Length: 393
Length: 137
Image (cartoon, each protein chain N blue to C red):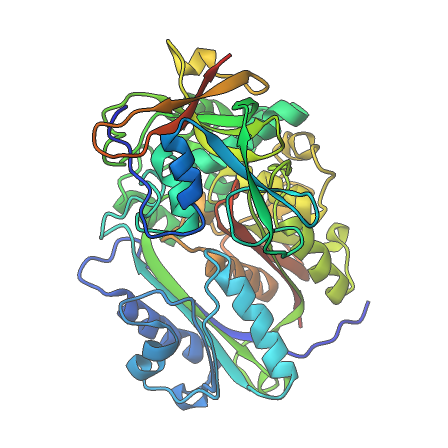
């Protein structure tokens, strides 16, 4: 199947540290951008498109160009939570295809761990808003919101804790092969920096029923950058380009009578696959936002890797690891075991690119087609889904 | 729990809902144009966009759609509470709200999906608005 090749990922960088005291988010963004441009063999002054989720001290559409010292022709400040970077890839493809940009960049930086931000167990923000006024009184943590999706999924389809634990097990296996992930778990003082079993997951501390600690992502520092370029630029870069061949965007939210077990991915996934001209069964490797096990499970169904309600059977045999036949996920170690500073959508694109270049620490031999699917916000309430289908050169 | 976070005003969409809570009423809206049930409250209908909504009073009875018992949190006021159940409750009139299901006993054993529940307005020491929570019927 021939795909249209109108924009490519040319350079990537993942900031190596997950605990980076004394460094600002803006410094992480700038250092990552320089490294990603070096990875592509491009210059600082080549950048003409700036995509940003507004993270960092004084960043965003007004502040980031000034901090970096860039003069972009297109500024896109899409902020839709952790999937912002899939949206940035989608918008970069659109803008490059339209001829408005040649070298588009997105950067991410966060010091969530060093700043001791309670992402998962803190409450909703205060202040007068339509939504906060309806939800603020109930002590609903972010983790409890995802847990409500897991609870309903288990009730509705018979999905088991054992089946979902396979996601944590496979992801940790990948993390133990990634030196940066191992250092992350050491620096964040994980109890037991080693491969884990289904039993380990089931015996870990309950955080919000039915989600246990080893089903929840870490809170780290970190960041990175990606460089998206036109086909003309892609011809002359240092590494093989990774082509963006399909994208999809969607949002979903609490609705009266709605089905909480279906995410925005049920809309963004089919759109991305249709544009790419491929089917889920052709995908070699899937990077699925693993804020929690249930996020991966729900999104695998919604993207069409299996039918709704059947993910337990689909993953229950443990084949998600890179050395098993069948679909492989999150070969960098994911948010569960490598890197989650708050919005890990960027890392999905970075690891998919490594796989299609043959550079992963858990390489799937001959990987040609990858999907990166980000889920931002709250899976059981307002969230976004961003799907990007990528192809090797 | 008598020191829950209070709603903040001015906030015009949700003010009638909270005025209802003071009266012991669980209020919701329906659209005079398309008949849709509208919740959370807004000035426009979320189905058809029309700005012609009627306020109604729910009987306050519904079913637990899903829930989670929070075992660990860093929310001021909730940290000392012990395990508590956050839930989506589907009211019989057709709207879904985030709330707590409060039981006399261990929520880990006593809260279930499909459970029938009824609203109760919990008076607060630290604010003027009682908070609608749910208890098993």
